[in-house]
Length: 134
Length: 118
Image (cartoon, rainbow over all chains, first blue to last red):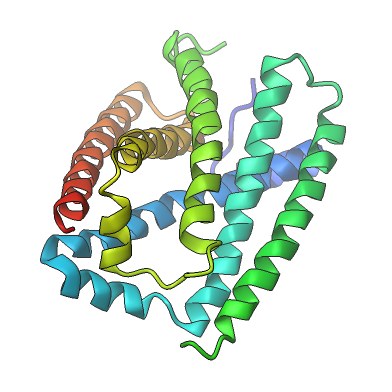
């Protein structure tokens, strides 16, 4: 069994260096997006906690989070969510239905869906970021 | 095999996938309702109006713990790859459970604040 040597990033460098394939890159991206989403989830809960102070408190917070800049940043969030979601479904399908052999094909199917979702997201969110309604 | 991990890691593997399937559907709906609508500006009224419906309350009652379990179990899997010592691993697992349950309870309280706000 693999035993990581000293150094926080050593495991990742070894893994990518020894096995630079689609499965390894998707594993690495799944992990990076996962860690981002955990940190985002805490911030999400923190922002929603403003509802304890009632409507004024919540609206003050939420209006700061609905600016042209945050709508652009939300495109990044959507990309992180969409990748983690689609790749996660690919892993689950591969695990549950004995489809580990065609996992690369499944990955590219997931990435086609990812691309479609991102085109829709870009159109909607860029339109919103530059909306005169701000 | 590392004997220390025992049966727990298989349940972790399975539950990560089960919560993941739930979260996939929940998140798509969550994004659809909050971000891909014509009226995209969110305020307290919009949220409390939605939270009047029992269906949405039930939605969040499942969404909150499922998301937190998936987050902390995923974080545990990252740490597990570093083969922590038995004591450290146990301490972190306990911490993650305490935090997960505490934040779930806090999330449930926030559901109440939105539900009462209308």
